[in-house]
Length: 334
Ligand code: SF4
Image (cartoon, rainbow, N blue to C red; front, top):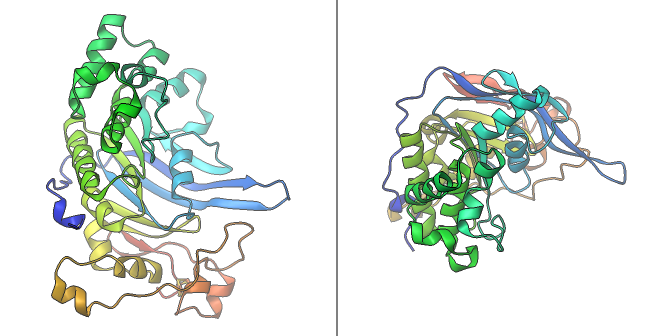
């Protein structure tokens, strides 16, 4: 089977990213209060920014809080504490008309193209849901817009009156992308948009997202657990572990010069296409599972799986520290 990397054709270009920040996340917390009184700390004190036209990749094992982070950033969840600023305004304190404007400018593409499309709706109705809510077009214009969006994502207008079950997984994800693009957003949270797809289809969807970003000047928060795929689409990558950002930096810098023991272990698991290098490569085995985010203990969240843990790691939670230009790590080794 070809590797994800060898199938890539589009390359990510950073040109066009301005200094202007479109998303600013500050000390974001999202806790879920369980019936037995326990607290699930899905996102715990997360801070990052995304520049206009940039893609920030967010990676980590299942249960690390990356999806909750994406949904909170887009306003689908109310934050427990902290701020998400979109174009300078805190999305949790917007007035009604500002909130409506925000929902037009910020959209989400969901992970599962099978579950995220209503099987009783036609493709045209699915894509134009947002247009209808925001009363953006007349009936004639609505159909023209749907046809335009279908073409944009590599489908055609004959697909408009069909139902989701008539499409493959990759085509359904294209429909999901067309739906997200319908109201001409500036920012899209891509919540594991390729995880449920075959490897051959994953590359096509990534290439489509890269092309759309270039053509429409979009900004992405791209959430995934496949690190090799994330590198191709991301300008910067953030690594999450148990609700916290443990490392964040420019893609190439982070992949070539990882600092956090967790990032090193994740990267060591990516297969290398060269058989000679692959044969001699040493994989860092992570012992144990990701611990529960319910009532976490003090100190570094990674301490139970870290071979370098020292007494300080038991007591004090490390904060992000700058290691090189635009490269930060949260670990007491630095
Ligand atoms: Fe390991 Fe300590 Fe660094 Fe955590 S802070 S990753 S336990 S060395």
